[in-house]
Image (cartoon, rainbow, N blue to C red; front, side):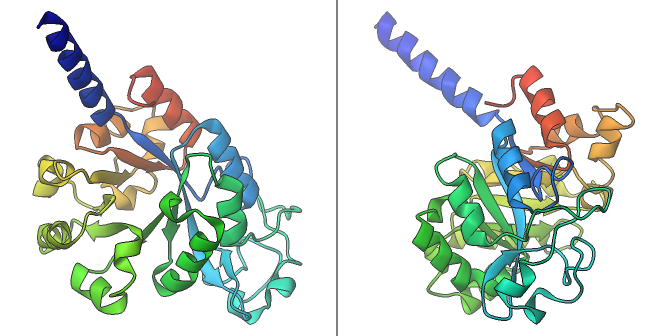
Length: 284
């Protein structure tokens, strides 16, 4: 009997410990050490030990799904115009710019290249700006054997998602993005929980007064995670990376986010975030 109690205690301890861990998402990869949304940036992030990398999808003129955040390639490459203005072969002639604006030899990668590079690493890929390309993205994930490694996301309510992709939503890992400033925010979350098993909910807010931030156990008790961004202050009411790093104020930034239920944090400081969480025994 004592042995059974000891085993049960150990299992409970491990379960609680796992629940307390916080996953780290690298926003556009490790863009401080490689061009944003470059294959190298995602590989660097994976090597440092992040759990998820975030990237953005666009399509070329000939239908190739590539990684690009902006509506144009002007800011991040030495080219001009929209990705859809170019064929894939044409767009590959441009070099991605690094953090100080210098053109590098890094090319705009495809989603297929990223998924193959990260396949088997255990690192998930968050598909931002992907709502218009779900079918194309899923086809690539199936081709590369990485369906379970990707997280689809959008800002639409469940009814809109179901209407747009009725036959697809049961085949993907999905995360709703919810603006907590909106009065209907909690109802949007509840509707998703009634109809799906989301991987997580990305919660954005300019004011930190939402009741969902005070109590989000109704989310986590279903097995879904709470994703809070620590990057731009406009996404987290000022509890951001710069406060943590430049002001050396973790209490009002990363600690605040963790205290308000985050089990995934998307950051522009992945290496520092990992080091901080590991010191607090909050990362694997």
